[in-house]
Structure formats: C-alpha cells, structure tokens
Image 1 (tube, rainbow, N blue to C red):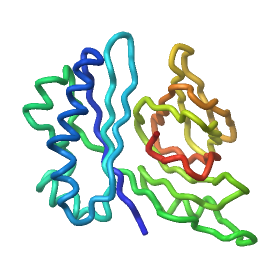
Image 2 (cartoon, rainbow, N blue to C red):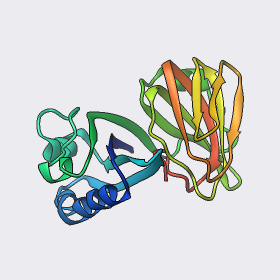
Image 3 (tube, rainbow, N blue to C red):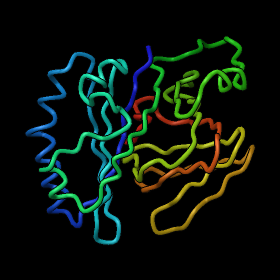
Length: 214
C-alpha cells in the first residue's frame, strides 16, 4: 500500500502566532480532514529559527483522489484559509507529495536489488526495504529541500548511493555527502536535508520513526 504524504511549509513571527495557527488547525482544518474518506492522519512540525517559527504541515492520504476531495483541482497548491494567513508571516503554498510505501518491502534472506528498486521510482519516494532487529533500512529517492525537523528519541543514519545530500544542522553549519559517503544525526538535533538533484539514499533508523519527521 502506498501512502501519500502532502507537505507544505510556512513561518510565524513568534510562538504566539504559531500557537494561533495550531489552534486554527485543530479547530477548523482537522475536523474537515477527518470527514474525508481516505484521510489517514496529520502531523505539524514547528522549529524555532532566530525568533521566528518554521511550521511544516504534513497530511497523509490513501490516494490522490482523496487529496482532490480536500484540495480541489490544483493539488500542488496548499489550502490556506484567510484565518491562517492572518497569523502566518510567510506561506510557501507549493505542496510536495511524498510517496511512502507502507510495510516492509523485502523479507529476511531475500536478495534486494537496490539500484533497480530506486530506478523504479521518482522523487519523492520512501520505502522500508527491510528490518534489522529493532531498526529498519529505508530507501529514499529525493530531490529538493525537506523541512527542519528532529527525532526526539532516535538517531538517524544517512548513506548516499548516488547524487549529493546536504544536511543542515541547526547552529552547526552544513554537512555535504557525496556518493558512498555517510553520517549519523544524533537524536534531538534539529536538521534539514537538501538534494540539489535526484539523489538516492539509504537511511537506518528505529522502526517507529515517521519518514516525514516527528
């Protein structure tokens, strides 16, 4: 089963404005979402950034048809109501859709052809290839920027198979990974990944970590 994560980002001038947006989402947006067949859940990530707050809104859906029932004909444009715009200082209304393959793709002792698996998909795509004890190995095919986020209780490992991956670390600059280079991001560290072009990565993380950020 493929789950489609729908993501857009915005900024608020401070915590009070960010709180106002979250209240609006819970009071007005979420009840509407829950009334649509095929809506699977929502996550809102907020990260403080030099006094302002970056907000990433991620909703999860069973199909593009379900998304159209919410967003209308232009599914690449975020649905941002006037009440929300009134408390947000910036809105990037361009939506990114990420295909998340549900479940574990390959069993133990099954050969995994990673280049073939990556070639079969376009950015953005994420699937769990296999499990290793309490962790999973995920394949990502990405291009462009992800939002700032963190995993409070889990470390995260990145290995670049092809392309280039930039990992911005809050307050500590940017790590640049080329092909066959890797690094681990400790739990609790706010970070953001960027891929200037199509990039294929492997990630190792705890099985419960959401691929779209905690």
